[in-house]
Amino acid sequence: MHSITVVIIGLIAFVLAVFTRTGMIDHPLIYDELYQYLPAVSWQEDRTLSVLDGAYTRAAHFTQVIALSFDILGEQSAFAARLIPAVIPGAVMVSMVVAWAYHVSGAVTALITLTFLLFWPNGIEVSQYIRFYAAQGMLFVAGALLVYIAFANLTSLAWQLTALAVAAALFLIALDLQMLTALGVGATGIWILLVFLPGWLRANPWLWWLAGAVAAVIAGILLSGAFAEKIHWLWVTYNWEPWPPVDDTTFYHRNFRDNYPTFWPLFPVISIVALRVNFLPASFCLILFATTFLLQSFGGLKNIRYLFSTMPFFFVLWGIGLQALLPALWRLLRDTSVKAMPPRLPASLKHPLSCLILLIATGFLALSNPVFVRSAKLMMGQDGNMLLGKTRWQWQDADVLLAPWLADNALIVTDEEMRAIEWLGDFDLAYNRPRFSEFLYVRSPDTPPFTTDLRTGRPLIGDFSDFKLTVLCNPVGVFITNQPGIRSPNIIRLLQETRTAGVTVALNSGNGVSIAGWKHGDSTVPPAQCARLPDFGSPSAAGRILSGQSIPQRVSSAAAER
Picture 1 (cartoon, rainbow, N blue to C red):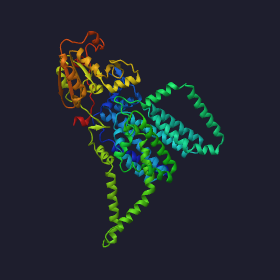
Picture 2: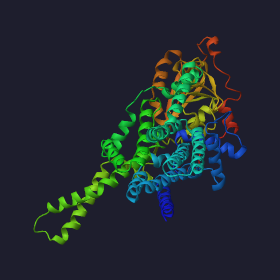
Picture 3: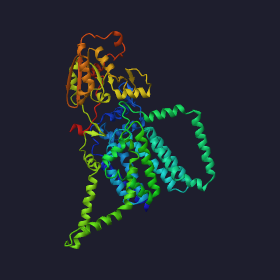
Picture 4: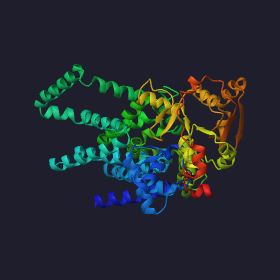
């Protein structure tokens, strides 16, 4: 009967999660989503992951799932790209966590956990984000819960090994999607060592010898330097962040402080309560969440979506603690409110009125945390112009603004490569400093400018000096970017530094897009310097666009069309 109840609760949670995670499903894509969307279109059409003359191969299997979603739903659209690859995995993760919370702690914990998860802005947004984070979170959580079940619930060695084998497979798939999975897997291992190893050592003294031997082998390997290069690479990867570097160790703390002002300061207190009343699941939740929180706080890259796979355990911990505290706290507040009422008030009204007062107070407490109001807006699609802090730029006026420049065969430069492919169909050169900083990390610190970006097959630069050289060596060109880019330091600096070189720069803005076009006569730059520039092809992007060789890859979005 208990198993049936767990399944029913999981199904209810799944349905509610799907309902709360579709408010923005048909809204336009943000830039990052195009990295997965464009190769998915290519995969559906010709079984390649091509983007222009390059290929985006990261999380290739996930890209293929997006293409499969196109096939199943019969359309290439924002809706089809999000439903199966993102919404469903996000809802399944909610379902698993809530069902597990009920299994280990009861109905109140499950209800509190479900409330937190439904009103979780990061969960709502990631579940409507065409990247691999929702799928990675689902796979990691499933693997972690299998590890918990193997050590805490199963007694048969065969079933334990089966559960751990499945968990390992899930972890490997999740790791293929996102390297940060390794932090969560490490946290799971720490839980096993801290909670179970002491008991194993007491019951089996010979394990001390085995543990000592393992420690000695590990120490020997580390001291030998056999893996020194790999360890160095892992350390550099852990600390790396794209330009501009921030080194913001309090990022996650501030996010929780600002979004959960009631719950974050009391997190240590509720952790103590939860550990006291239900140690095993509470320790599991605490170690998984706290370990990944701390490791990511001191790492390089930071984004709240990186905590997507372990943040649900923060909610379960609160559920366990509140389940223990709420009965006594409710009675205390109810009795106190009854005693505070006027003596002449009829006794039959005091208890209902006290309950009403407490419900209002609970609502006030909840609404004091921005996540609940923001979640409600996301559910209703009222925050549709942003996703995960990024604007859904739409270059509706790009055709009109670019038409005269295309006719002059202008060189097309952009800092929004994927957006340019979506709305124009092509470009000649990417001027993207954060992306070029990835080149310096992934390839070599000596990577020269104008190196071909394998994602698009187009050359890439990151410094203004190379952009200026491109302008001075090409008599006609245009830089296209999002609408606020017209006021960017790059454009201002271009205006300032080309005045004396006889370059005329024309600025223009439209709906969601801005351009800075330049024209000049013969170049004043020595030919040897201009020879550093690559051959942009014949025809160049402008010619390929005009001839129809390159066509826009515009994303069908019902919200954008409305």
